[in-house]
Length: 314
Image 1 (spheres, rainbow, N blue to C red):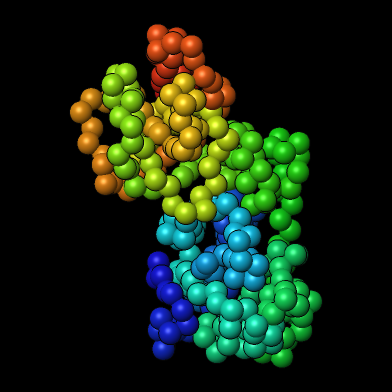
Image 2: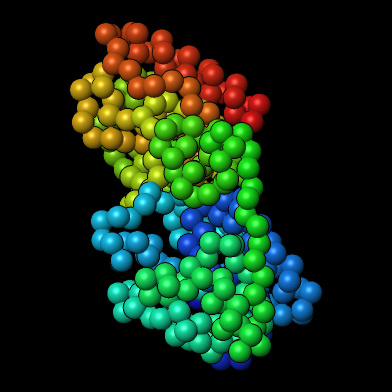
């Protein structure tokens, strides 16, 4: 899959393509419906498929400080999109100047001149251009004049998560924020994951016999609610069962909120400085302040035992 940042990266000889546009944060199951349709339609027409997305999130430019928690950083989103068989991902730098482009300007510059779109596939609530003035009706009108079709895909995917609420990035963020990582996994089609670099912490886990990877997460990451989780830690391409703690370590009167993962039954791991991923499978319990180190150790042993059992089954 080709990855482009900005219109200038698109090859001059790029031919016709089937395109979809959106933030696609998390690439959840609703997004997957759209992207799969793009790939399918492109293959039917003998052209290439393109996903257009933005960096940073548009809300951070339009309303600074309102950046939503991200379900996946940009490189991870590209990986997930690539797994769906897309030919190219175009990341458009979202600037104040870019945000002021009218829907007509955006359509001509991106879809007609740059990507030579023969078909655009979107959900029914798609908006584009300055102040989100463009909708699918305007997109279809502009497409007719440019020999570019428009297909609207019904995104009403539902399940048990959110009491049957339609799957969306907003729902996923809410589930993650409440600690319902199992519900988030239903929406995403895989466990929720955060990434970051392993940094040195207070070393308490090592002293207690449970050395943890203290993960300095990517800015704006959607971090689950404070508590203990079963899941996995991936480093250097190896996915290891893990017991994960999110919170401030109240037993030690901590104040900084951290994400720490203990790789179960692994001895002598040196992960400092590595970029790792932490996946959340099941919420085990809330964060607690224990009266003694022995009480804490007993609970940690139980957390590890349950995490081992759950990840073996999962």
